[in-house]
Image (cartoon, rainbow, N blue to C red; front, side):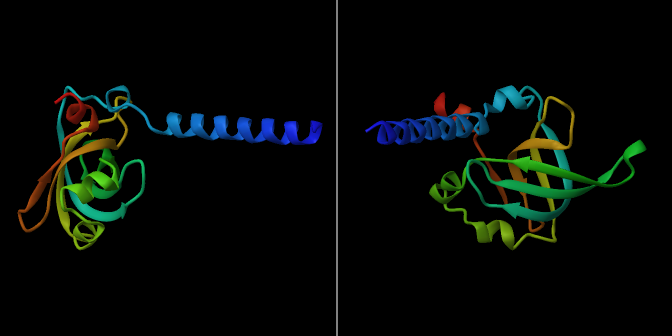
Length: 139
């Protein structure tokens, strides 16, 4: 019995640690991004990670001033389930890889080339505007 109690305790501990890691990975948009200012970046869509808890879009943009050359940007967005609910699939993003896109979003508070994607405009002029999860919950 002592062995089964130890195994059960270890399984419970593993479950608690896993749950804590999942909660830590899912952060508040307002904690990490400056939601009071909207910025725009145009560049080449390089890659899209269609993963939970948020999709991630990678863009190579032209740098300005001291950052002349190519600047790699990373934008996270709503979860894949949200995109599916509004009729947008992974293929809708994938077909734009290699094309010039414009992204509007909120930049990370640390000033890095990282942001929260709020609107994406494709080369053909079509666009998709997103609602951050916190804003959707406040409706």
